[in-house]
Length: 110
Length: 390
Image (cartoon, rainbow over all chains, first blue to last red; front, side, top):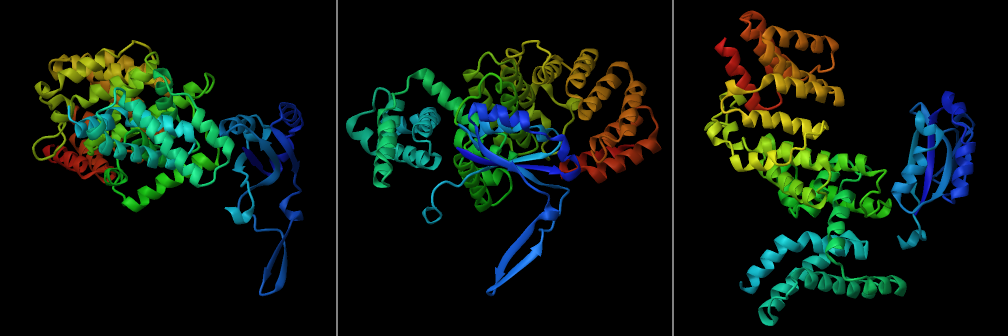
């Protein structure tokens, strides 16, 4: 099973979540395939096309204090293993980690 | 025994084992349920003609598995998966035990909402129909059906494992399973009695499957030692009869004995609560109740759980053991902490203690607060009655 793990933390707490050791450990175990840190919402841009017109705006509306600060692609035996891996991420101590199963297969097949 | 009776009996005795095994073999809950249903229908047709098989459970499992193979073949499932399913070993007794436990733990996985865990456990493990579950929880069949379908889909799509958790996860996951059973039991306690019976049935099953788990025995003991009073708990008008006024000859002695036999004397949450219930069961009259022991058990329980509701119960026991003044001191401290704000039993307990201290005006005010907060009509009626007696 592959999961995207979204790391959600309040911006002012992000510096407490250095995941270097976690990343090394999970790479070694072979459960983390890739991932990255994301720049904050203030540097983000939204794009929509409505009635043929490209609508570009500055960032999405941030409704909560927590925002997605990074993501990891995990490959685990099952949800229990993914939960165990997520619980060891330093951001789990104060932020929220969301495990989303990757929807495997091609779009028209589902 | 004639064949239709044998099928009905196999349905009661074997459905869960067969279903649990076929879910493991196919990894697909809905397919497994349909195929098990088909297997029972096949038994109704074949057993009258061919005779009842020597091992009905094995016959049903094989039939359901072959049905699943047929369906998967028609759905063009890849050959490797079919091979795996076709060659999976015929389960021995131990394997079957494990399959039922796997099913229970998967239904109660913490990644499902509590509502979904309860519904799924009742349907899959308990064998209740969606209509029955919907009726018990006062919701529509459509809502309940959707809840169950969503839960099964999440199990499949989110990769919730079909297994008994390994040793390091077992204590916390087992607590979750027991929590679901106790929630079911309490739903039944507050009126829908068939749910309490179902919770006990599942508790007995779990105790058979995990005979060395202290808290499994503790929860079963607790449920039995409360359920024995079911007949005495309400009067002819459906009004609540408090413990000290119940006709103790109507308590079910068989359940009490079964419950007592499960006590281990371990200071764990369900064992302690069951020990408290056993103290009540042991008292021939309300006046014979060993309140100092109950107060002591509640104190241990409060230390373990930190729950303010347990503190409140402890205050009641202390009031019985040492007098209402001592109980009231604890209740007032609890009220001052604000931890039970909005909980009707806090003012109801205060009212009762003030009444016994003959502080009537204060008691009346506390009863009024309790009536305003009480969640059910039965409880409001009881409190109003007490209020008017002042």
